[in-house]
Length: 489
Ligand code: ADP
Ligand code: GLC
Image: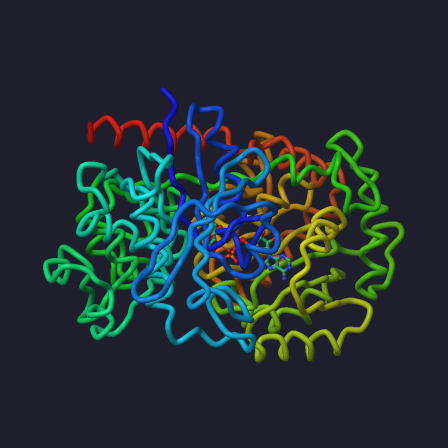
């Protein structure tokens, strides 16, 4: 029996992306299709989404969706069904999905994403003719209120469906002052510790975690970390109370989109058997970042970093180790956007090492592909990382991941310790301590491995052979869906 699942997310490639959530939400429909799941993705109707979505038709109207008129538009992304919530008062604005052009959160984000959740719950509980779903899969706090409306105010209680709540990052919880509650059009009973109340306000993610039939997060290690005060960020008690209703399912990547053998963004395409062709990509990257060419690869590795410039990603520590990195004969090409003070620190570090360190500020998808194809090693020094995708792209492209031992980074990279090297299974370098000493030691280890070309090639090939696809995790999600639908029957 085919299951119809409504995946509710605030971003999804190829329509709108600020981070890994978009890659995952965009990849899930194809990941689930082989497992008998027909997934429809529901997105907010930001201008970019409506502009890029192609043909859309109106399938439903709300005179008042938490006080504003709205329409539901239906279309497709490739072979997969798409629903778009067109509510101009909430979503038609310049800037990003969550903030103004200067990056400041929209002051009405609570209302915006409550309305999104309200609409998703309506769709999932029979409000729209011709749309029928067996289950709702909500991603992050922006979609979480769908589960609250399904529980407390479904369109048709008889059509109420089970819900999965996936945490992509516990650091973003969608917490709002208590006054918001009166505008949510939820019954009084929802204002309780079993409902949407959280630390005296309204907790969107908290509500989703409380009310979902299954909570998942994006790696097994992160699933364990959020059960602790440090990783749970105030919601660890709730996660622990959910017992075996909380699991980790590691992310995959879209291996068609990220394929070095066919990637149109690259100067030279390659496979694990033609690693020598990576050199042309490296030369192109050096030129693009103004780095001294190293035609014989006689020095150290060319490190790359592709990231949001934030504390989570360890980007405050990176400037401290630049001298050490260059002193070891290595070079660095960094692509990032985010915090202006981190950007300034990186720029001043780069200025001390012309030709050795190149920084590009901005967001550039094609460049990120070229970097994975031309860099030797990708550095991911995150303080915490629910899953992380850039290390998976690195594995796929023979760009050896050098990662802090946390969350999904710990789960996806096999450290080149003596046992792993002897067994021939290492795929990268792990380190602990996101501080000067931790990073400096990891850089030193990576440089030493790089200077043993046979060893290095083995690590590259192992990475390229590791399964970073959705095949296993797609099956795990499908099994969860089937279990919940069976329980609800
Ligand atoms: P997060 O979602 O926490 O930022 P992930 O590693 O899961 O971390 O996903 C980040 C995604 O965004 C990856 O697809 C990565 O390639 C991409 N990315 C991050 N920063 C940039 C940038 N400046 N330019 C292009 N792509 C970027
Ligand atoms: C979040 C996390 C990241 C994860 C991504 C997709 O942005 O920070 O670790 O890979 O979601 O699940």
